[in-house]
Image (tube, rainbow, N blue to C red; front, top):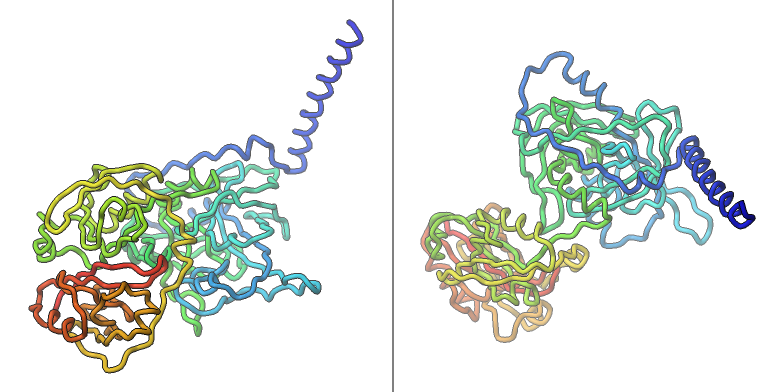
Length: 520
């Protein structure tokens, strides 16, 4: 064998030996192998109906079988100065984000060297969904974390493993993380159930890390379905409500059915400042929603479609459908259309009713939202609408939803005008001053009155009207002052729908909003 060939042979041999040694070292020291970071097996959901008796062993069996799938998560992050996101919650449990109050049960920030920001510590829960170290948890548990450590069930004291964030979704408050240090023993994966099968009264089990009490098991029932307490203002996410005890630190843990399958991710509790712990009202993000997002979370980014519209809060009644020229009560009434959005460019306007989206019927507001967000951005789809009692089809090119931009601006507020006037709909209106017109960026020569007060449980409140809304039209008739607004509203009989076009300054700036309300 020539010298050149001999040299090449030994070079290849050394390279192969190096790879083999490297794999052994990774195995011995718990380091992840490159291939493990590339694979995520999406768990299958058991869609079989829940059945069978509940006995003395049921919950004991669930706790014993599923606790090894649950992990405790400790995070370290740099403390920040007060900013907008803190008004909606940071990495604390969502009881503060949705229901107010200050963070509870969090250790004091570590003292930092001069010139450095102090460190904050947080705790949460997660559950293993893949033997390659993939773990599901809440976004608010890890969103600001600079260091993530995970401890496993039955681990020796202070034994933790490093992890990194793979993908996050603020809207559903979910996050996918992966261990970057693997234990020597194989991981046990959680099993997925079907959250759409759950009904009020069904037994559920929560396992988590409340107040750093590792792998605490609590039992309760599903209290209600579809509670719109998740997400953001204007993009609420329906959640499962449960009375299983959930406390700060439970965030990100599994909510399990009687087969021990995950049906939700424990996310929020109802609490008040005087009693920050469990009050028997907790919320979990349905696992079906999260499972659909897993491929995108694995890629590191969740994309959703948006067409730049808002939908009316008042459901389509038979009377309202008849007044709008609809054949039935199916459809979504557009209350707002962003001036520069895809819908506006296609010719949609406030007051239009979308009855089909991309060839699929629109049953109600929620159906429209689900169809839009699940459409790939950049896709052009046909949208069938009823516009001023005339049916037509328009083509809309779907944009990509930018949550940061949508939620970034806060609604402007105006000074309450003098001499408010009652309307008979549970709201008071007042004149529009030049200062109000400038501050709310009101279109020139438009507007009859500004809403200055809305009574609780009133027709105006049910319709979603708010203080500082400017009434532009009543029943498609432009109004120029308080008297005209009051006169047009007084013409409505009890049980008759009234159509309002208002001007509202919101996260996307000033825009017209179509609102329907019914006089009682």
